[in-house]
Length: 239
Image 1 (tube, rainbow, N blue to C red):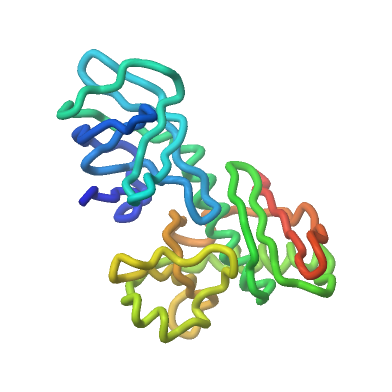
Image 2: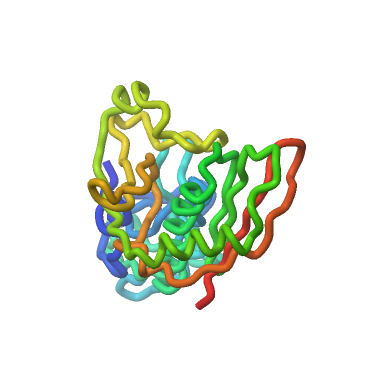
């Protein structure tokens, strides 16, 4: 099994690994992976791969149909040979902005407690789509409430439950379009706040900040009607 470093320590910015294979499309397989693979609305990480006598830019990371994480080179170049030791280096600024926005979207789902029908995260902006037949409160009101939650500097933590426990607690799942990362026997829950101060708990495989204060101020840019009952709420980082 590949060691998923991005899941165990989202703050890790560099790590060594061994090349275990190449895909027919020219991707790279490692025994331990620092790069988050595209999924759950969060883009795959980018960065560099360095080995004795070579280096290459990594454009993104994805998953094979069998679930293996694949590093995708940015350009056509000679791949590091199977068995080679490599050093992985993240584009940390980009990853950290994904972490900030991903956590902000969890809080947005608290401010707007409706089923989520879709979402997307970028390095500057992010959005959630909601099953929202009626218009929400004005953007300025949503923005004030969202920034108030961020400003409470709530702890972000994780715990694990079994697939069976998740099936027995369907209310934990807020997303209608993306199912939580189940099927491995256990599911990670991301919790915001502690004890009586807990504001959110939901299954998620993405990367997050340690405290909501790290997100910084956000702006609710716009609210768009997307179909008969769907509305899209877009946010951006102010810095």
